[in-house]
Image (cartoon, rainbow, N blue to C red; front, side, top):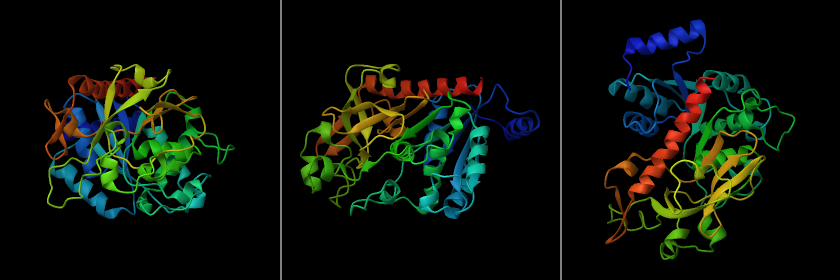
Length: 353
């Protein structure tokens, strides 16, 4: 649903004066770019993210001035009044991400001001953070996103520094959803590590054409995308089945025996971080597709994407290669929607506790 500007301001003023309103759900979105705003507004407008009243705070680093200006302009142009932007200020070196630092008070404010958080996708975590040298194929995130690793560590803790009390100890049911890079951030912040390149390290493949010739179940992004510069139709998204573990959280919402998920990643969990356990893998068991936290029941991550608006078109169809198309089955679309509904319920419960 949409707010008028007056209603939006009224909500925020009332919260400042009287604390958290019980009828409004506060969602925090890390790295809320224009593209991610398009995703959130689509999910909200379509009732896929389902709330009576939703207020979204997007968080960006203050040094990311170009994106901040784009976001502010977009919100004005589109007359979106249920989203606002806050910034994280200051610089912290990579070796100070997992200790109390100048961001710590700001992270406490983020935790206090929201009912739950979503960490969305992007490029790759600097391998130095988890003690490895950097692969040629690794495309490192901009430095203005390093704070996301530190925020996740402050929220859930990690084995890099067990003396730090995680913020979620104050509210163990606080929901955190990590999508793609968001799940990798969750794992690395908790002390885990990553495979920097799935085709090279796991499947021993070096060339795009080799990967494209592999079984669909082993393709985690479409490596035919972009290799022919006369081709502007091939999808960058791959689709492959996943296998759920016995106690996976994914077995709840909309579960069916064969789930096919949209996938765009070349990195994967290697060693799992503190208190994280595998909730799903690729069919061959070689790639972790979902994680869940053993102490905080609403903290979980998915390596696949359910946040692309194009997935929810009535007859969503994607070109995998010339003359070969993949159409998403209705039951898989229902599964993606069920995951968002499940997150909505977790968030709503958190906001009314």
